[in-house]
Image (cartoon, rainbow, N blue to C red; front, side):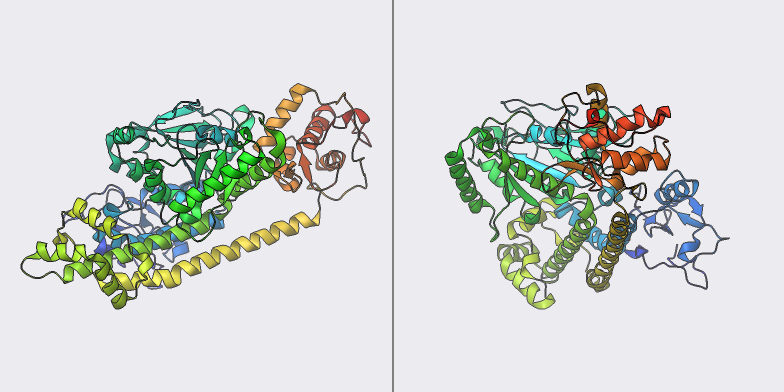
Length: 627
């Protein structure tokens, strides 16, 4: 079916449609197109499907189509549109969603066709799916055995997760994806690797390329974010990837039944942050660990280093350990910039040596703040990854086409081998001819190995390069992607300005102050909030995602707690008074103990229609500052 067969005279928006002459297989079921299996565009997303996978029809007046003429869409777009119309989904998509959809359209229209034609997915990274764009930010943890990777995740999550194994011996023998589930009816469960790799709504389908032996060593620890008072709330926004401890011996490394370094490289390309963990007592870097770190080449901006278990050494030893670690890393991570190293003891046990307690607290705060910033900058990183991928795909196509065009009619194998042996010279020639930066070219040994593995050095398997595809890709890189990112940045700035304006208007989220100024501190051993109630309020407090201020106190801003308090059904006038009584320092945020006061005032007075006190009674004052 022609791309414009359903276009009206007014010209509906088809700019995001994939050029169907470049598409060989159905986007959904991978069926090969033929005379009997025709191509059909989804009018919503612009991808190309077979008739069976694009059999739904809906009105799309927002794209310029007539309201009275339903248009063909794919199953995914149909579900999205109908759930939004019925109120089952979000009725007001955020600008993040709009930016992600824009990225998907640009990738399908101008980048994916080039990748498919020149087998980019087989050489380097598999073709991206919608799940890759929609995925939460992921954090990859790499380190030698027993450096505390699993304990670190447990420290951040706040509770045990299914399948965790912690011990001094090598306990984690598989790749474990620790993901959150927001469904209140869900329970903690472990999803085996083979089942995980076939789920279309998760970005792990391309892991099937590593074979059944690897999938047997893969699992997903699906953790409820609503159980146990919502302690695992960080999993609403971030997914963690725990890896097997890197082994030191060559015999143990060879004993792995899958390509460990290849798997690490796959995750590195899709993760938003990579944490290299070191034990203060074991700074040696094994050959396999060094190879794994080398596989992170090209992702230097994602790498953070964590020196764990630093509380077990004294001041002089810590200085020497830190220096030795920086010296070792300098030989492996070859960047002119100094790698950021976080020092601390990242688990729930008390510190063994408290001399650096303040330092460790600040380092922990910096690291957690760095991880908490990932969801907010996820869109920028997605744009960055698409740009990197587009440049790599363009370079790959130019290399293949260059080598193909230089092959003689006879003795092709010998001529190709000669060019592969001097691939650096061929890179220079492509650089001069097409202006491709030398930094965009893959390592020669990587290209040679991939060409041998996937095509048996047979360049006749590749079609001639259509220069229109390069022109369209250049247009995406120079025009469409920068404009999409600029629109996202501007919209995000407007949202932040509006939020700041709302916050500045009144520190009390329930309206103007009534003039009450509660005392700032009173010491009392018999606090009115009993331990059982405090435990309940503590769970609610953690679920709201408190952040630390400059003094290290965990607090929730009034805008974050507003919905929870309104949900109690208490009148706004009473909530305003409760806020003034509980916000002891009147900073517009609540510590845990201030939050407990607010909740207890609601339970004790407001819900029982008892009059609220004019001032907070002495017995209601917290016994200490909230930590």
